[in-house]
Image 1 (cartoon, rainbow, N blue to C red):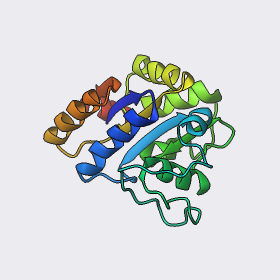
Image 2: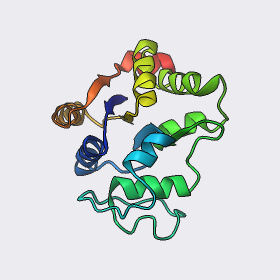
Image 3: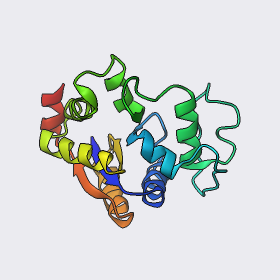
Length: 176
């Protein structure tokens, strides 16, 4: 698992674009952000016009993907019910499954627990939690190769990503 945090829509778009350029799709990418961040960065009433072309999953609300891009993908996912019940957070991708059983311990405990369960050290997970609380957007992806991991890290740094972290195979193994 490789994770990074992004502070605004532009940096999040760049981070997601680097993944799609490498062949990753919405099923490969995890994303965590607060509802407030979604409303600020990807308002539902804004026509989304970005360069990023993505495909929202089947069943997303009609018209939600009309503009293309990450904003449309998030709108489609939110419309499809990916908002985490009982928590003010949006989760997509493999990490969303960590919330499927219901959130316990409040938002902080749920986010930290989900990240630790994917091999992210607890102190790093707490930094991501703080970043989400402050309006950040956290991405996670399991790189398919060392070459992909190096590419993603380089591109996320160019996109002004923060707290970019690549879990070691041992950390991921211990989490399972």
